Amino acid sequence: MSVLVYTESWEGNFRKSTYEAVSYASETAKLLGTDVIAIAFGNESDHELKTLGNYGANKVLAASGVEKGDSKTATHLFTTNTSDANIIIFANTYTSKMIAPRLAAKLKAGIASNVITVPSSTSPIQIKRKSFSSKALEDITINTEQAIIILAPNAFGLVESGNDCKIEKIKVNSNASVTINGQEVASGKISLAEAEIIVSAGRGLKGPENWKMIEELADLLGAATACSKPVSDIGWRPHGEHVGQTGKAVAPNLYIAVGISGAIQHLAGVNSSKIMVAINTDPEAPFFKAADYGIVGDAFEVVPKLIEEIKKLK
Amino acid sequence: MNIVVCISSVPDTTAKINFTDNGKEFDADGVQFVINPYDEFGLTKAMMLKEKNGGKVTIITVGDATVEPVMRKALAIGADEAIRINISAKDSYSTATKLANYLNDNPADLIITGKESSDYNGGAVGGMLAEMLDLPFINACNGLDISENTAKITREIDGGKENISANLPFVIGGQKGLVQESELRIPNMRGIMQARTKPLQVVESSNNENLTTSISFEKPEKKGACKLVDADNVAELVSLLHNEAKVI
Ligand SMILES: Cc1cc2nc3c(=O)[nH]c(=O)nc-3n(C[C@H](O)[C@H](O)[C@H](O)COP(=O)(O)OP(=O)(O)OC[C@H]3O[C@@H](n4cnc5c(N)ncnc54)[C@H](O)[C@@H]3O)c2cc1C
Ligand SMILES: Nc1ncnc2c1ncn2[C@@H]1O[C@H](COP(=O)(O)O)[C@@H](O)[C@H]1O
Image (cartoon, rainbow over all chains, first blue to last red; front, top):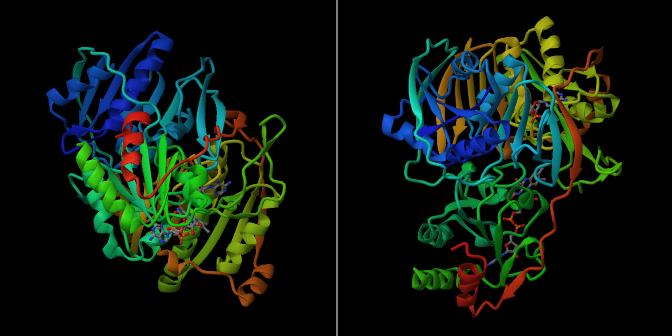
């Protein structure tokens, strides 16, 4: 018996979402009275691998020979090491969402994605997940002996435990069926999925040249920037920043919406944020119905003041 | 080139989501159904590839007869033919199994699914299907260029993108970027007329095996009222965020 957890690193460092998944795995393993085994395939240093123990991993299988974009070899890596795993846990990343369903089909294991709670019962596994673009929560059971869980973004948080985890190195023969030609990553930028704070702006900003203040506010808060769909459709901002029902679903601690009306499709992707702030000239803007705090006012006056006040605080 | 687009029929994005029977059943009463937005990008891409390289675009949906209006819309946009697998699938595994059975017998050069369905949000059918057919799978695909037998593909990764090449056939999970929003097609009168006579084949199926079971749904808790702060008093907002909400 064991709980297996997928890990992902960028530039040699594990991501926060990985530590969150390991924390979740550790809580789940306690319910089952078993150990957490982490699988790593990013050629991380031993020092970095050891950090997985801080969140409850008992052992790390560090594999070489698997590329991130190669879901077939990654699936092979998991299937050859999962024979005694009861539950396999994945953080919410683009790569994990490519591997987990493959693995589910290969193992014929039931899969639940967007999961927000540890199992409320373990035989069968029952968990709560987000559904209908976060407009609903669903309780489901996984009826197979092995279960696969993909967490919702920022749903669980970090739980430190301080295990001294063992490292075991393995080598995998690639059976890649695709060729990875390289990655283009904006390094140093905080990813939307992991951001604690997001500053987001909409069509109310009138034009791309007005995003400087949004970026300044975001930098000051250590936040990521996002935008509404029309803003990315007209090319004011990159598609990667589009949040909402048809863009990214995010769940930061703080979501600041500037000049965004609060259409139902936008709110669907952001209303899992813990605290939402709306800044809008129109007191009737639907965003005020969803927000925790609001200012009815002109973004071009309010945002610069906000920047000044936050500077004072820091 | 033989392209198959897997289409899921989902509630319109503006639909209010309600449940009946103590949260057990989705209340479809008065809800308009549409092509899953991610699948619409894929369908448009398929049309463009066909226009460039020749071939045929087939759409396929697993569902009962109620999904047919949405399938007709896809035909009106320009798909050549439609296959409906007549079963109400109970989870992503049963949906993927049905699609895989059909595609094993009727192989395609390119299989397009969406990144996720906007109702169930499983994000699982495409990857499962790829595994069942033993094909490569590229998820969150936001760029696809095919010449002859090989494709240049980009997929979104957290904080950037990855460039991949692969030989046909393979499965993608598509999203915006595959085509731009402005390139999406609205069915015109001629398309709608033609769609009525285009073939929509119903394939019977049995053995609906599911690995997960939905117990019940609930709606997220409603938020309390919004605290409004005066525009001349931005300092108060900062103080509330710092001292009350403790988020900055
Ligand atoms: C199928 C479908 C899917 C969709 N998916 C998404 C999605 O995923 N994400 C998404 O965001 N949208 C989505 N939409 C679009 C959505 O319906 C709205 O059209 C969109 O969210 C509006 O964007 P906005 O708030 O930036 O612009 P607008 O609705 O134009 O709002 C601009 C706001 O700015 C305010 N404003 C104007 N000037 C100022 C100023 N100086 N200072 C402060 N405020 C000002 C206005 O009062 C207004 O409230 C979808 C639509 C469809 C049909
Ligand atoms: N019932 C269905 N019929 C055909 N394709 C489907 C069906 N359900 C899901 N799909 C495809 O699988 C993708 C991912 O769906 P899901 O795993 O439900 O999030 C969708 O975008 C569709 O392309």
